[in-house]
Amino acid sequence: MDTICDFVYDGTFDGLLCTVLRCINMRLAPSSIRPFDTLSQRTKDIVRIYTDRALAARFYEYIGNVASCGTARLISDFYLSASPDKETDIYILICKSIRHGAAVEGDFSDGLMDRVQNSVCDLYREAQTYLREISFRKSRDIDVAVISPVNSILPIIKGNILRREELGDVTVFDRNHGVVLVRRSDISKTVYTGGKSVPENAGCDYLADRSRDFLYRYPELLHCG
Image (cartoon, rainbow, N blue to C red; front, side, top):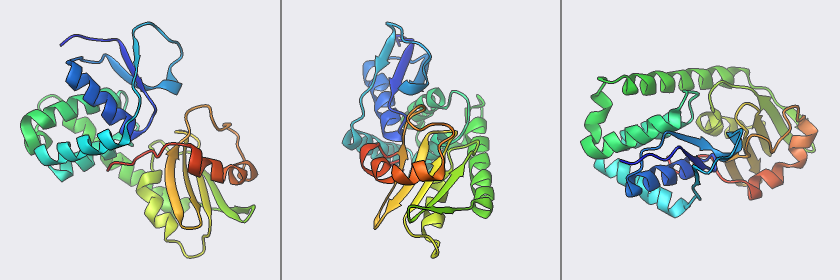
């Protein structure tokens, strides 16, 4: 395969799936894959991938069919982890899954599956810890919380939070990953805002005021999976 230095995507799981699919179709082995807002500089070698949610959904379903639903879920969980170079690892994992099917989950020969399994375990351990500790403050009639997890845990704890009977409309901001869980009336999403869209010191009033903006103007972080 030929190599292109960097691929950039919109920071969502759908966007990453579209990036991996482009690499496979064009027989390009990426040296790196990064959300576009995390790059410190631009070079002529960067290839920007635009997200097609329908295409991503079909590709995710294909991975589940040729490997297993468990493999597909493992990939989406690993995406939420804080593992370094997880995007490139996911590219390799998807290629191996397509080539070897569900057997990839038992292949610990090169260290990849060790990284995946350990990272996903850390993700779920941290999610359980935050479920016990997260606290909300009422602002503009919205229940607001700010968290700073190591892993991107909001998609994991979303259901537990939204089932809490004492909560109404909800906004939870993960300041480390630029991710927001928001519910207004009967609509809820976990969205990716990008690294610089929300001030690092954003307070509850600011987050409450922007809750509708988060819900309707930002892409869903984990649409597939």
